[in-house]
Image (cartoon, rainbow, N blue to C red; front, side, top):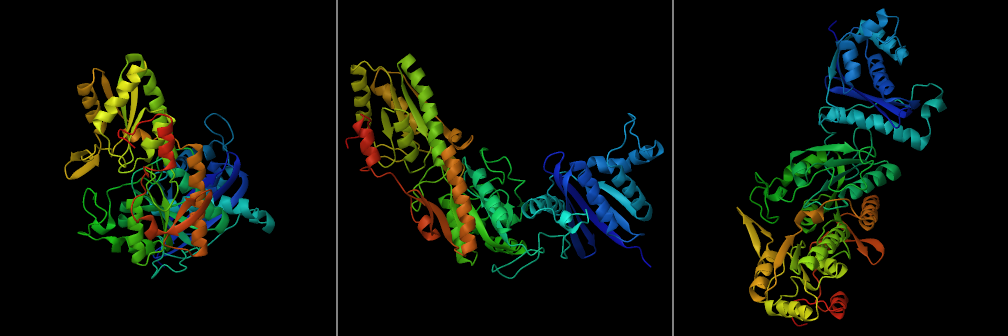
Length: 548
């Protein structure tokens, strides 16, 4: 009879050390595989690593050959470097003369390895190996399930934990499916896909956390995260993410999934594409197939107008999609506010506050350039909050003479400095916004330096320009954005449960609602020059660089 050969992946996890712990193993023989996992109420991470190896080797017949993959260097080295033999010869004492911890499991591993030929292989912790990731997910999931349902092992009186077994193909991300209706993975759990697209902003991690926790805690759903925006969707760069993966990220800026604003599946080119509407190299079909391979029922896209436009295009291909509005520019028409905007305004306001002191000390005119593309929301609100004397926004073209008149009027009243807050898309009447070209890519920026030079030409006052740039995208989200992002993420999961697809979550007044994706990508929300906010700024003496 030929020798049976198995590949085994093991992993353990512990919430506290000691604390509740879980172990898991994925056992593969040829095209067949099964998954086992269990729980201990008070244990250590090392014990869970050993427990996983013991249970996995118990599950294969004597005389087998096994390649056992573990991310525990301690476990692998104990066998490969002969530590366990030295302990045995030394009466199960360490080199320091102390009793070896978890002797019961070490002894059982040694006994099992006499009847099974085991090759111990170290894999990198938190690696991109999909089976290793799956094993880690199962171990952590055992803790979650036990916390939610009580300890099944104690109820059964076995002390062995809740052992779950399944059958499926482990070499890929999950079973292939033929559509998006009520698909489940090999364990019968439904799945959501999740990605962050476009530019980063504070609050992305808060949304990721809310989607994952909302899905796993309330509905027993799995969430698959695609790395680096739509590129990960096309290239199938993804992994399961659970509540442990999102622990501690609420206050972190950026995104744990990574993002990109230059990868368009409908025009997928090396180096990325800056145009979301061209379709020269269409790889959207690959993206759809990857969703089906993972058994994903709905794709949640966190992004601004470009990313949500792509989400809308995927919806037309039959992919159920839910959008979450993300942009510091606050320029999406279907929501009153986007998360990330408040954090950007707070950062810009803090910078303006600091620039006030140096402007006053040197009697200078300081021009602060903020982001916002073709919408002036950041400039308007940061300018008002920071006491800007002149606010320049794309919606109200300015005239240099009116800027000079305001500066000189302040000068005549003994105010020897002025603060100008300019949106990157601001431009003079009859002129065009300024772009910085890099190859075929053009980006807004540079208006502050032009304005500063013009002021020095037209007055005797020294002028300086400060471009805040990506500072506005970085750092921790404000409390407002953390709460808004959390509410958005939870609402997205609720929409999925209700079967309301091709919608974008949105804020209307104080309520979280939803709007059709086609409404979300229909144009740009810009500042109304006759709005109450503009009138309030004018009422306290702020100039917009032109007569209003």
